Image (cartoon, rainbow, N blue to C red; front, top):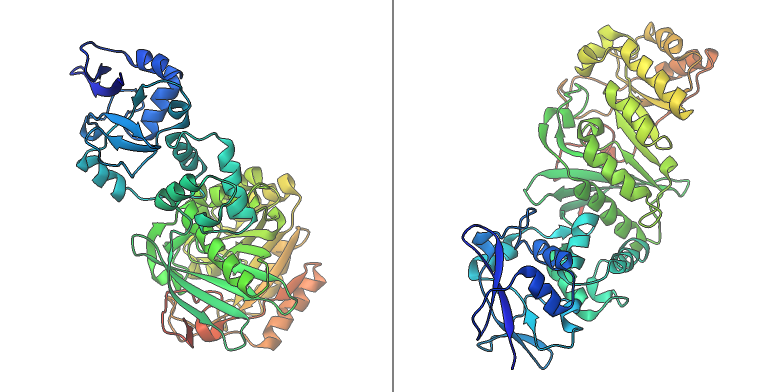
Length: 468
């Protein structure tokens, strides 16, 4: 005789069971013993499917009775309809008994399951839940991550180290790319590629791949859709903040760029958080992304090749020093005095230059790392000659490197009436810093013909030539 057991909720919310063909009541512990498994494991199995809440009471809106039998290795309802959406866990199949237990998903549950967003492959906790749901051992996650992160495979059907049915389950319930590509634009010199992405909620963000003449490659990633900082020289600041990107949306920019470069026979070397948004106002997701980027069992980027740029959110400067002492830090300084800086960067009202420099002194003490200072050169605004000695005095004796950035005309809040500084003025600033013992370089402008240069990211979809 085949006795099939189902689980039903009692009116008081507790779980109880009734067996088919016989009268009587069974506890979950009874069911677990019949199945030869532990009660906690059975609870975990049901909870992972969303049948139970964290307090182990059923979710009544999703629970319905069902009786199952095993026929030729397939799992069928008692009326013979094949259940294609799931598979019985191994701890049931391996038991030499005629008892089996499963939960029949009603039409409402199927609608809920099918409309639930897929789990990102980067979401380790979610991936573990899927393995529990599938009745698989935890070591499967290491196999999956080796295929994705180390072998660069995004098609689950190619994951030959895991069972075929698990590959199918991953294809159905796991997402390796949460962003859709709207346009890809490449500069005339082929050094710069800008990708316009759309998130699942239709927010637009941009990333930029840079191929340097030295052979190294860099990806500039976005951490927010838009930006709340309203720096007057930046086109992104004109957009305002639309949303913080999730860690998965940040990482999926990297995944796409790696694929583009791999098709060219290149490897991604550097990652800079200098795209759309202020990283320190989305610190939780940015830090999660950095941990995955630098995890030796995942992409294993060197921390020293990851740079985070901030306009100067003082509390987070101390936090990143504690959390990521090897990650490089860049500061959008752009002026050495409060008056000039307040005029172009509203953040200076909250965190004036003196407070910013105090926090950076602490950062250097904690990390012993050089800080990179970004200084935009705007004719008549930030390149006034009296500012050069002020900048030199501000950084004298500090572990600093200044990166002068010629202003890239765009559609920032300050409008189109401004021009980049002349090469002669920039050289005068450099000589002044040199006399104070402060090293500096001038950033080579890349991608300005496709609005991909510093300060130009504003989701313009029809610039230069667009590649399919």
